[in-house]
Amino acid sequence: MKGLTIGIVTQSHLCRNPRVLKEAIAAASAGYEVIILNTVVSQALYREDLSAVSDHPHIRISPVADLTQSGLRSFTDRVVLKLGMFFVSRLKVQSFLALGYGALRYFSCCKGIRADLYICHQELATYTGSRLLKAGFKVAFDLEDWYSEDLLPGARATRPVNLLRTAECKALRQGVFCMTTSYAMAKELAKRYDSAVPAVIYNIFPRNSESAPKKSAFTTPLKLFWFSQTIGPGRGIEEFIRLSSSFRQGYELHLLGNVDEYFREQLTALMTGVHRLFFHPLVTERELPDRIRDFDIGLALELTEPLSRNYTITNKFFQYLEAGLPVIATATAGQREVFEQFKAGFMLPTAPGPIDLEDLEIWLNNPSTLRKAQFTAHQASAFYTWDSQMKTMLTLIQGAIG
Image (cartoon, rainbow, N blue to C red; front, side, top):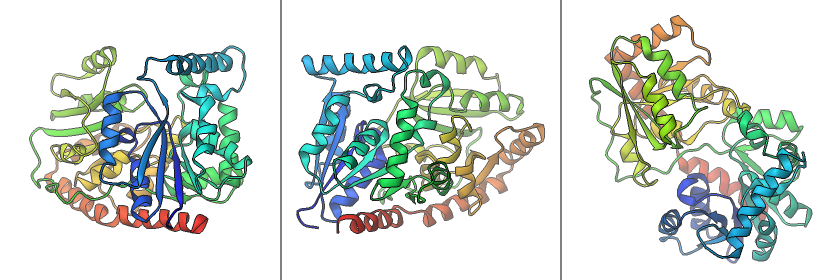
């Protein structure tokens, strides 16, 4: 492994993409040199990125685009992205320029590091990886989402969906290996593109030995928790508030993430008098596990459209389990995958009827069932560990480059 370099290609800050960070640390700990090529949109987030890898001298961050700079390059990156989106939406041209900032440089920057293996994340990186394959490089892909099927209708107009489908097909058929987030997703991708089934690396986090376990007692009223980088429409929050509006016993709904004032007012207007709504600002990835433990029940709410959301299992689902929280989870194909082994909460049908809502209300008001779900959450956390996922990933890397 000495002297072998892995280039991890992404568009996000490490502190906002824990999957990339975990893979980088795992590869560096196994003796590989790791170079992360990404885009910087905030100096504050970039400082968090650097802090996250400060204890790992074999990891280097090499930004391809930096929008915090005031020079011509940053200006050009913004203009080129807008042009790309114009090409797609108005001229119906499948332009890769619409996939992200620095699109014109990603390929050359990747070639420039001459990595022994590239692992490509996210949309622009997947397209770039398909070009690297054509140029003769060893390229693997981590399909965190089903990119061509991960867009709400309003966003599809400015995205080169057919180009993404072509890139996904090349990734699955020609990549040295592919990874994704659930067996449900892996099987569906293989079926769609007539490819080998990708390996599954669950969105599990390394255990934090310093974190205190979740207290066993539940609060009154119950504190329900949901988090994401952005609190916005299409995440199932509005639907849950509407569905639970008839519950007689009040609860607190705590949402953590960035939210604009318009959507905050929308959600606030939906809440009935017996329930209360709280908003919390984003915290760092290191702070998040302890923050989750402040609450009683995690909400893993998903819609089945776009299609990707039906098949993936998000990081929040596993972080709830790690914190010892029972989970209210939408019955998507991905989340059913875990509930079939560990019923660590309540599974809500994708189109719940009155009987389902009555069952949920009964479940929420039964201390015995809550304690049982909490115990099962701890069991699931002990079963789904990052160590096992890391071994799978490193085996794939070793098979590709030694």
